[in-house]
Length: 184
Image (cartoon, rainbow, N blue to C red):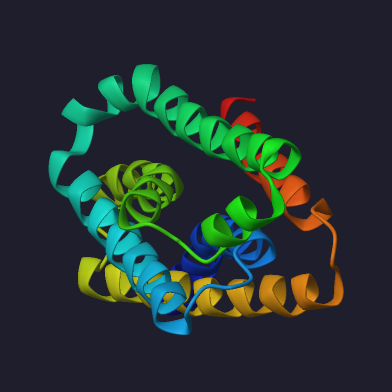
């Protein structure tokens, strides 16, 4: 596998992180930048780690992943998306502002797990083609981190221009869409 192929795979793997980060930036306007940075670091660690885990578990894990992994990722993203939509349509102004300023560690972990399940499958495929795992894992982790930062900034700057709850509803719809796309 060439370096160009690894970079293309890394960028493709990071696209879910990018979309989720845009969603986070849209609905979490009061968040401190270091918390958003923590989310991006988490995306990079989980994407790289799951790729490596998939590589090591190889064919044994492929059967389990095929039957359960995608459904779990879909469920996590759909629940988080539904919570965003529910919060935007049912919270009072002060309560919504308090929630917007909080990107909890638990939410960061759930989003990281949900976006990295497909990286696990990529790792399995790497096991069969004997890919250079140091290069592949590093490229995927860096691309996921960078796309997470860029996506959050795009979402945050877009949300500043909108004063309605529409960004949070759109963010929820995006997460649900990503989850449904995984199943289809």
